[in-house]
Image (tube, rainbow, N blue to C red):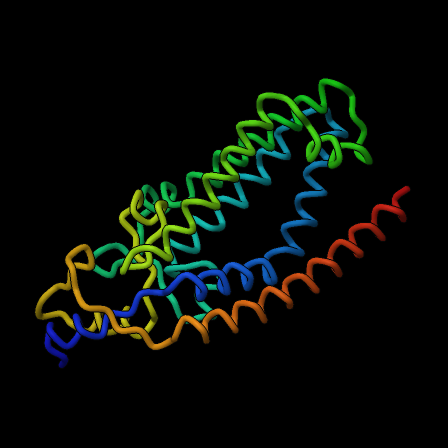
Amino acid sequence: MESKNQVKSEISYIAFWKRVQMHILDLLIIAIPAVLLYRFSLSTSIKFGSVFPFVIYWLLFCGFYVFMTMKFGGTPGKLISKARIVDKYGNFLHIGTASLRYLLFFLYSIIMVLKLKEGIELNVNFHDISHFISTYKGNVSLIGNFIGVITFVECLTVAFNNKKRALHDMAAGSYVISLDTYKRMKENTESRIDLSREYTTATNISVIKGLGKTVLWIIVGLIFFLLLVGVIHFISTQND
C-alpha cells in the first residue's frame, strides 16, 4: 500500500485548458438532447400559456449536472477525460455542495424562465419566442448578462491558483482531480489526505500541449455547433 507521502506527491489537479476541453466534450454529448428538450418545453409552454413545462426542463437540466456529480463524480466530459470532482477528502459531493457548485446554472435558469414569462404575457408565438428571449432588453436580461460575465470570470480563476480551482469550486469546497489521484486517495485507507492543505502537485500535461488539444477541441466544437444550427434551422423551416 502506498504511503501518505507518496499520495501527496502525486496529487494531480486538472488544469485550465484540460477543463475547457472537458466542457467542449460535454457540449458535444449533451447538446442535441438538451436542444430538443428545450424546444419541446418552449413549444409546450407557449401552447398552454404556462412556464411550467419550461421550469421542468431547467430543473431536469440542472438536476442532471447535480446528479452526475453526486453519483459519478463528474459530467460526461469529465468522466471520459478521466477526471473526478471531489471534496477535500476525495469523496463525491453531496446534494448540498453539488447544488452550490452549479448555483450560477440555477440562477441563469431563473432568468430564462422570467424571460419566457414575459413573452407569454405579450402573446409571442412559438416561432418568435426564441428570438424574443435572446433579444429581450429588460432588467431581467441585464441580470442575465451580469451572471454570464461572472461565470466567465470565475472560470478563469482556474488558471491562477496551484490547485486549479474555480470560484464555484471554492464555494462548494470541491476539487477537480485526475482519476489516478482519486483512486490513490481511495486506496490510502491508513491516513486520510486533506486536499485543502498545501501539497506539492504533479503535472503530467504541459501548458503548450494542453493549449494545442484545446484549440483542436474548439475547432471540433465549432463545426458541431454549425451543424447543429443548420439542423435546428431546417426543423424550424419544416414547421413553418
